[in-house]
Length: 198
Image 1 (cartoon, helix red, strand yellow):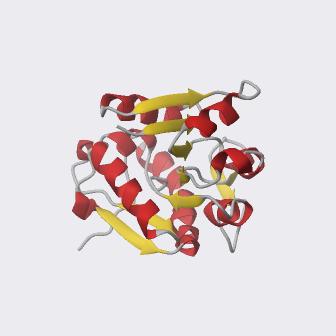
Image 2 (cartoon, helix red, strand yellow):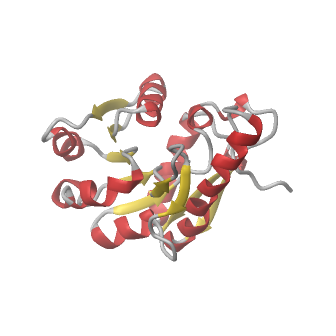
Image 3 (tube, one colour):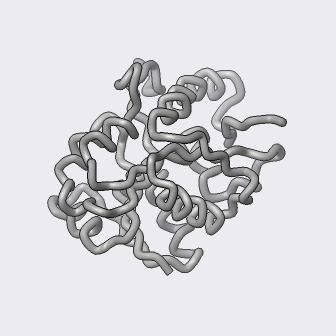
């Protein structure tokens, strides 16, 4: 059992918290109540960033002390939304939210994952008719191994997880969010994931 803090109690955070609790972990969900995120992060071994990506950097940079020596799993995408509320552009072109977080939190081990799919797939990858891919980006091999183990707890087969390398590779996976509005407009809000076909 691992002690996990989920920052963000929307659809993504709530979905992850429920699934990780079901898998036997001790999970705390922090809402926007003042001090809730700090309290949750302070006592957790692993912290999951499921806050809206446009404000994640400011929120998490304020938790530098609480996040020291922790694994921070970043599942958010930092986007500028269009008039219909769908992602229209990236906030950090030429970089990524994950890179910005790692730069701001030098003593935290940031791992980017699960940001290339609609949220139901994060905790139920077998719901798709084709094999999805969960990508890992991060500098610390042990932190990535910890996240691999969490993913298997969520139903991800080991050979469905692809380690892309360092934190810079999150630029590619975060840019994949720009597919999402077009796919949804084309086929509706049906769960899907970006995957590597071999």
